[in-house]
Length: 347
Image (cartoon, rainbow, N blue to C red):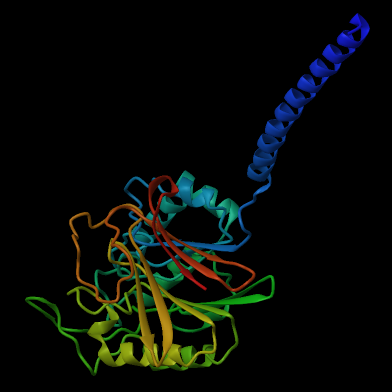
């Protein structure tokens, strides 16, 4: 075979080998580039984000604000015990609100997020207090001031703290009703094993009930009803709507008749976090309890709650709700560094 032909064959063999090697390198690079592109272009699903919490002692460390701010919420809801006032001296309560407002972490949240809320007993002014608290009207004004409620707001012209807010996110209507379970609450007797349920006692009062019924006639896709006291759980001996059996049955019946596709209750008070669910007249009603921001019931153990979904949270916690454009709702209890303790999705 002539030398020239041999050289040509060797040349083509080397060229083919080099081409194969280049194709293999380029294939690997393309796959890696594709993976990297997928990671870099995958964005967090857009939602309307609500954060909430309770049981916040202004004198204690408040480590969760940075995590709450990191959620980039559209809204923060106070669920009560926003300070630990426990006094009939309005000067004492004002100083405590001022101290809370001066907290740097809370200031960061206020700078980027809308704030709404209600109260519970300690910011109301007396532990487990109700309608007989002598300074409730004066205390209410301080609480509304703390929440930044305008002087001409409807709530300023009536007794109590109850309010409602409506938000629209990509055509999804979200209604938030804030109830007042202190201003009109009847006294319930306490026995050796906790509170004694009283069928004749009421927690809202006639005027607030009438207002609530009118609010529930409005249309929304997602309904959130917030207050300081657990509604669904019945077994623990502490403050709860079950201590007012007639009131509890009434509100659950009203909610079951609402046209909203998703119904969520929010509550605080208990120094634990948990999610509960009950079916009333075939309608699913969820409840997220988030408490506390500065101190928690670490020795709670596995407290009984037949309606609980998932596990109980005994550490510091805050709540998160995501609502997306498809009306899907995600309920979350989070702890330090934004760690998700419990997540439930309502499709």
